[in-house]
Amino acid sequence: MSILGNLFENIMGIENDFPAGAVLIDVRNQGEYASGFIEGAISMPLDRISQSIQTKIPEKNTPIIVYCLSGARSAAAKKGLIKLGYTNVSNGGGVGSLAIKLQKTICRG
Image 1 (tube, rainbow, N blue to C red):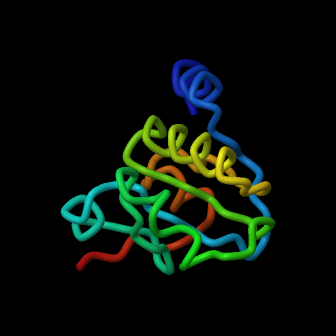
Image 2 (cartoon, rainbow, N blue to C red):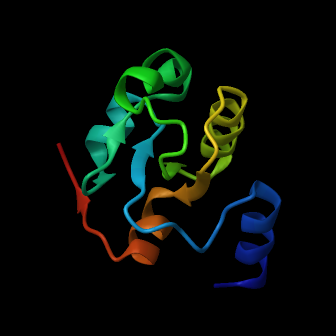
């Protein structure tokens, strides 16, 4: 990755080491999710995550990785989930780079 890419990831708080078995949450809107999401990810748009997270993931110590297009919305999602009491949340950054890091397929539909 380029120096600028590394700097951007550091500024956005994007992690590179992720817990095994983490739940992937795509915080982009439904149209963006349908255009390409990481295999196994749950769609939970940023503007609705606080209303739906507790029914989908009731255990607050569950490892969670949030991602979006660039890392900005996922940074906001991580901050919001921590405020709700979730203790093991990682900012995965953008969908493309995270899929590569996790060696997962990007699905469409």
